[in-house]
Length: 122
Image 1: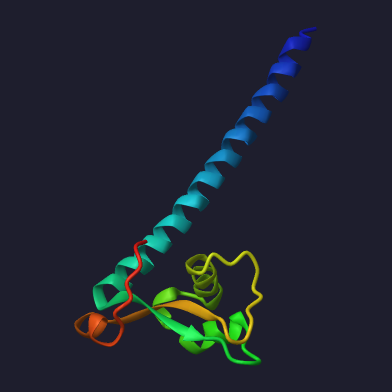
Image 2 (image 1 turned 180 degrees about the vertical axis):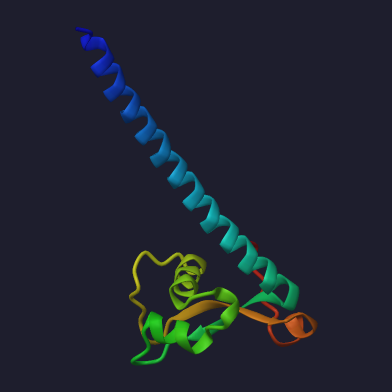
């Protein structure tokens, strides 16, 4: 009897499974990146990213600020919320009344610089 053939079969099945898992992760990651790139390309065609400063009022939450300023170019409210956190270097979603937040917004390309002068590098 050849015990090595049993082990090499199990070993081969494991390697095939491992390759399929890695391939699935690669394809899933690629789809996510391509979806994000497509969303940014659509937004870039129709509008320009700009930034404005808002004052946080009593009762405001980061979610309410995001909801008030959200536009469809962001794809989802949670993506937009993450961008607001990134722009303001926030580690959590806590904000306090009286503070200021920088809020990214998409404006039509013709009026991008007419209403808001603050531009931040990406």
